[in-house]
Structure formats: C-alpha cells, structure tokens
Length: 366
Ligand SMILES: *Cc1c(COP(=O)(O)O)cnc(C)c1O
Image (cartoon, rainbow, N blue to C red):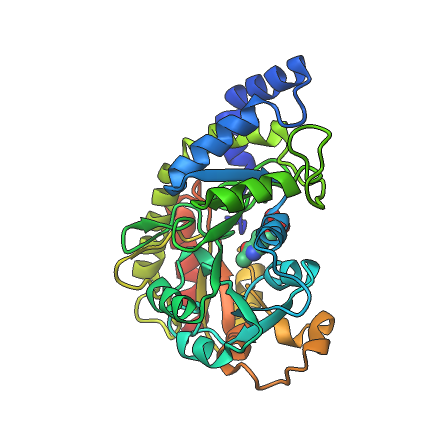
C-alpha cells in the first residue's frame, strides 16, 4: 500500500465536470481579471467567515502584506508573531517593511505562547499576528486582551485554518483582519496561488481593495501606492465550487484525526492537542517524538510519505539571522522542529490507509 502525504488528484476527479464547465465559462467570456466569479467568491467567503468584507488577492503571503500595509504599518514598526510558523508569516511582515518580533509557542497545542507575547510588547509594537497553526486557532481571548490594553491591531494568519472556530466564532472574524491562503494544499485550495483578506472594518477593506489594484478607485484615479495582487478569476471559479464542500471536507479531516488518535493510542508519541471549545480543522496531523528522524525513514520505506512543519524555526533560518536571535531563544519551537512529524492528511484519505499508517508506527515502536 502507498499512502501519499496529500493527494489532490482524487479530489479533482470528483469535481472534474463542474470545474471544467466553470473554467470554460470564464474563458468563454475572457473574464480573466476581476470577473464576476471573484465577486461571488468574495461574498461567499466573507459570509462563510462571518465577516462583512473579503478581498481576493494573489496569494496568502500577499494577503498578509496587504493587510499590514492597509493598516499603515511599515518601517520602524514591530509586529509580534511566532517562531514556529511557515516562513511566509514573517516574510510578509518584512516585505511590508516592518520588523517581525518572535515569541515561542505553547508546549501543548503549539500556537502562540501568550505569556511570552505580553513580555514582547514594546513601544514600537503595532500589531500581533497569531497563527492558527495546523488548523487550530490560537488562544484568542488573552491575545485580544493584550492587544486591547496596548492598542494593537490583531491580524490573524489563518492560512491553515479555513473553517476553524474559537469558542463558536469563525476564524477570520476573531481579529481586526484575517489572511487566508488558497495554495492548492490548504483546506480550501485553488489550482494555483490565491489568497484573501477578510475583515469587518469597512475602511480597512476598502484600503486592501485599492492596494491590490494599483491603489485605484475609481478607474484611473490612483489614491494610494498599490500593487498588482488580484485573485485570478479562474482561481475564483475553482474556489466557488470548492467552498461548497469545505465543511464536509473539514469533517472528513476530523474523522481521520479521530481514527489516528485511536490507532496511535498508547504509543510513545505526543498526539495533537485540540483545546476545549475549539473546532480544529486538521490542516495537518502533527505528532511529536524524539525518534522523528528514524520514524519518518521507517514510514517512508513502507510507502508512507510524511511532512515536517517546520524543521527549522524562523529565528534559525539564514534569512533571519539579522534579527539577532540565538539558538536556545525559543526552546519549544526548537524542540518541535526536531520532533514533529506530519502524518498523511487530506479529506479523501481512506480508513484502511490510516490503519496501515498506525500499524506501521506501532511496528516501529515495537
Ligand atoms: C501557506 C501559508 C502562508 C502563505 O500562503 P501562500 O498562499 O503560500 O503565499 C502563510 N502563512 C501560513 C501559516 C501558511 O501555512
């Protein structure tokens, strides 16, 4: 048996007729840039996230950059985020000209350590960027409290958490703005790059909308400095079809996570901690073991592909040496980098595949 880490082809085969028809319709009208499908998607996704506004952009990274720029943050401003995230989180902060300030993650659910956050706030801090890592929201209540007491903006990095909830509230509606990625492998994935900013703040939304289209409003009137970062109509057409399936797919991920939990019970691995009151959408199913290297080689030899999210924390990446953090600065993120292993996870994964993965993990520890 082969178990890929993710398989996007099975899903395409299920949706093929619908997708091809909708792509054909876009091409037949040559509605390539900001066509009707983009507006339809923006309305649908705003409503899905329970917010008033959604602006489709070219990628999740751009969503973060544009959100930061729309807030007016840039050179001299600090934005606090976590050391254990995908590099796009901090590269977006850097691309906007601001400075990423890092904090460690919690030892249980691996999202932002809130005690560390309050220590990291300085007079230059402008925003907090919590990452809803692996499909679970960060601990938003204490984060929002700290933000409020220091007058900081909260920008959610929700690239891994489409549909996740924090105490009943949809991720995307928790901070001032939230940023999503539609990279193909994400829970809601396009057939190329795509992203979105969502927010209840109409003024910020208008600014993001202008920035993504050369600072233009109305046509030929360029109010502010902008960029070209629009969600492609072809991608929006795909996303409109896939958005209707998102809840069902997230539910399938949840069932797979339950099956992994049963199958791996009693083994010397730390299983994902889903905090009470949260709905986790299992973008990734990340286990933790000091034997990570040996286990991943063993699984690979048996046809099971795994991932590592992330093997090098941000502060130890060559690109971020200028921030001046030393090894040892963020012990939980550093330990996790050496011990995390992401097991195969995607909605169409079959139960016999999960059983096979669990059996091989058990065999490894036996
Ligand atoms: C995927 C991802 C991004 C970036 O999204 P792209 O669409 O690939 O630019 C940002 N943050 C996190 C946490 C991600 O996982």
